[in-house]
Length: 147
Image (cartoon, rainbow, N blue to C red; front, side):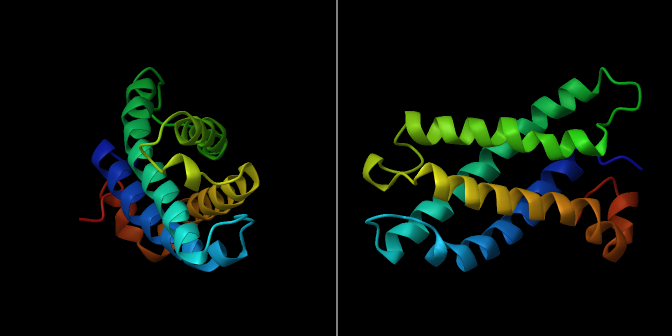
């Protein structure tokens, strides 16, 4: 059973939110944040996570539209992994180009961003393509919906 659009949105929101929050809690003190104190560093990492989730929901709409042109209406698993590149690049451009996500004085370094984004995204991808399918076996048959 292929995940429906609603299922993809729910999965991204719930799993990326949970995984991303835990990753941010654990790695923020270890990130190269320069002159930021720990509170500011957490504000930055959690803001990047929130932006990743919200922009990711918009990406899912675009992915769903593009999948309608494919015969099987889904991507190969490797395409799902490679989306780390375009999604990460867009979040980075938004971080650098606007002050909507974080103020200019709190922008993360490229190294800190790449570490946080890569760890979060890889764990999300691994969980969605492995353990979630085993533990929540009805998730697959509900079109990827949790609720």
